[in-house]
Image (tube, rainbow, N blue to C red; front, side):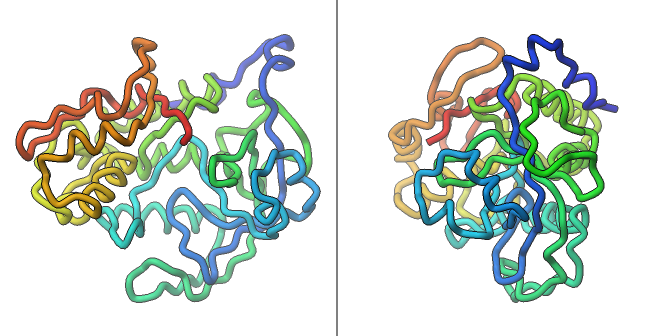
Length: 296
C-alpha cells in the first residue's frame, strides 16, 4: 500500500521555497460536455480566485466553467480525433471519476462521447499551480469533504493527498502516469511508486498494458485491441490521419519533436528516440513514470 503522506513531509525552509497551490472551491459540471477520466468542467464559487493564474487568453479567464486538466494522470482516450482507445477502460475511468465527485443520473449519447444530462453541479475543490498551453488549470482534484479553505495558497505538504481523486484513480489502475516539467518532485515520486505497485500487482489497465512491445497492424489495433500510453496513442492516431505509408512513421515522430527528459539518467531526448520500429513491431524503451515531458 502506497501512503501519500510520506511524500509530503517538508521542513519550514522547504515549504517556503516550494511553489504554492491555489485552492479553489467550486462545482463540477458535465451536462452538455464531453468529459473523460482526466478532464472535467469546473466553476469557481469565488471567480476572483482565477486571478492567481497568468492567462494567455482573456476569454478563457472570463469563462465561468473552466476545462480542467488533471495533474500527473492520463486516462485512456474516449474521443480523440474521431477515434478512441479500448472503451471499457476509458469509460470505466470516467464513471469512477463521476462517482468520486458524486455526479449521478448520467445519460450519454449513443457514441458515449457526450453527456446529454446528469445530476451535476456537485461541490469540490481543486488545487493548482499553473495553466497548461491550452489555458487549462492543471489540477489536483478533491471531494467536498476535505479540510481545505477556498482561496488559500498552500504548499504541497499541506494538501490532503490521501483524499486526492488523482491519487485514488492511479491506485485503482485506471490511468497512466504522465509527468511534465512543471510537476513537483514529491508528486513525481508519489505517482511513480503507485504506478510500480499497480504494475507489479496487475491492477486495472496494468494487466493489459502493451506500451513496451506491440505490433501495430492498423488503427483498429490501438482503438479496439490493445492498451498503450495515451500520449503514444495520440501520436499514432494523428500519424494514420496524416500519412498513408507506414514506413514514414519514424520520420513523422521525429518531426514532431516531443521533448522528454529521462528521469533515471537525466538525459533529454525526443519521444521518437524511445521507439524502435521494426516492420510493424514497435518497442518503447522506457516506463512511462521514467519520463518527464516538456509542455508544448
